[in-house]
Image 1 (cartoon, one colour):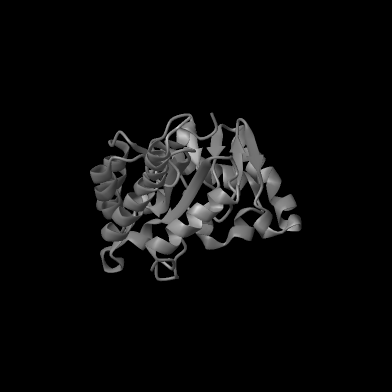
Image 2 (cartoon, helix red, strand yellow):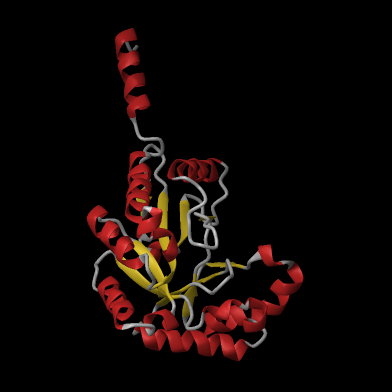
Length: 248
């Protein structure tokens, strides 16, 4: 039998473990809409912290300036970074109109792939839609309503059929229209913990976190917030995953 002192030591050891270390869970960091004014800060932090992440980029934003194109090339040159396709136009933020034409949706994604210089397999996120189309996972965006979802499903399937791997998300670090983050870092960490505890991930043990480029501008303390988020996730014992490994 274990002595009383041994039991106490073991108990203290368990208490000292990171929150999730005994049951490893993986976070997939994803950033939409770049390259924009937060991209440089995002890349700076990711390089310093040495964690993988995916930047789903918009073709029009790449073409907006030489600086934006350079940021895309910088991201593509980083070993832990995956550059994904987030469309060419971002639907011009008129989603129902955009998804009214399957051909337009496919052509838009294809044009972005050319601008971004991506090769298969192309990891993609559709603008404005929390949709998954992966080899072992298919899920629609139930948040848009059954009728609209039914109309748009052929578009999602057509994009997947021409070779795109489409990723939605499990949780979002929300932001105001200005780009200012809504949740504090501590609040977001608490929400992530709760999501795992409730088993509300699309794939058990894996959580795709959606963030947006504009949240990480200097006047929103972008580098400090992202550094604090990654530090908090590491402290809790979460692993960080490459998007290509998500559906394996």
